[in-house]
Length: 345
Image (cartoon, rainbow, N blue to C red; front, side, top):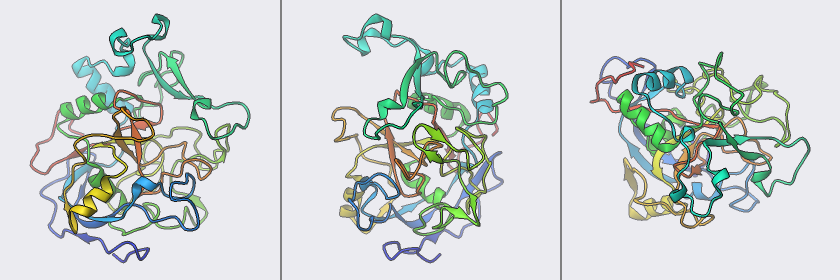
């Protein structure tokens, strides 16, 4: 299809038919060659946060990916509960942290829990995210907001508070795997080259919201203009060109790639087209030296042009693998040669 900006060349989609019937709940992503990344911001600092892309999403570079199946939606609480019931798996957030992993930490701080968005009751400067994030004792996938909450009636919401190893364990049980960052972006673009969002270049379509994001004043006030306050059930907005829901907003999604801000430049330096890249061999985040991170994609219900507009399809997130939050989930893929896994999803 035609490029939306001069920096993006046309997407060349593989024309081969799907290799058989779709596994339950999955869509065929044909693969092909595309321009990956986000456009340079105009008239602003290249690393500005807001309506512009982040600096680690450049340079735009050509990538080729092979065809694969992908979950149409983010993995839900219902699906994750089946996995836990079948295996007895205990997530990272449900385990008491080990003292040897956190030397010097007071014993009273070594409690099972996870990170939860806790908005202040007044406007605050946006230079310190600890003003709206809290480590909450008892928060986990069963209790998304802490010990007093549960997922009853929220079975079709995305599962959250999943660390990277939780995502891998679920994927192995389901006969699937986490997508690479390149696979994720190819799928999210839905065959459209260079658009700002999975649905085009205008954030609203005919006055309607196309994703679950934050409206109002961040972080203290959400106006719910998109009809959802906080996390939403999956598939509440139109699918993209490949039949995928919520590839922008709702919850961030883990990918299998280690995070490095210079990885795109390294791929471009290696040649004209990167063939099925699987990410760098190691992680490096200059903002937190020594803390290994994996790439997140898609943005969440907290993304807003006031602070983080990474619902823009070419932009990137990152996270420490043992850390989950209440706006981070998973979506899996399956290679054509792999048989249907335990869930039959």
